Length: 125
Image (cartoon, rainbow, N blue to C red):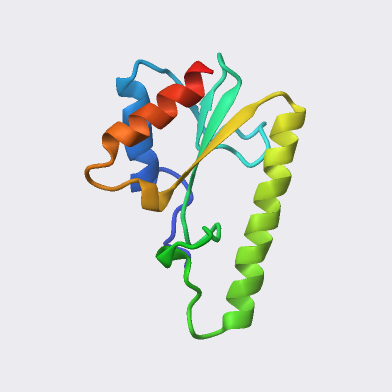
């Protein structure tokens, strides 16, 4: 478990490349914002979280299936992460920041146009 990184993951790098190719400039992992968002657009007061389906309990996703061993531990762990996420999202809203969640399962080959549109729409509104 210690080898699992929370920063600069492949899905996160993919989303950063898409945002950069659309002409947006951003900051990474701002510690002074709730949840330390993966990608921060200070100019727009908007952030993007690139969530792993397993770690954040993506509903109805095959990647979020709990391991068969030590189920109680994993259920508590994932539920705790989900509660923390909700708290972070609320705190961001209180600070007048908007957020977008992109799930790991959304980032796949052939889905780039859909992701570009989603990011563009989020940052333009």
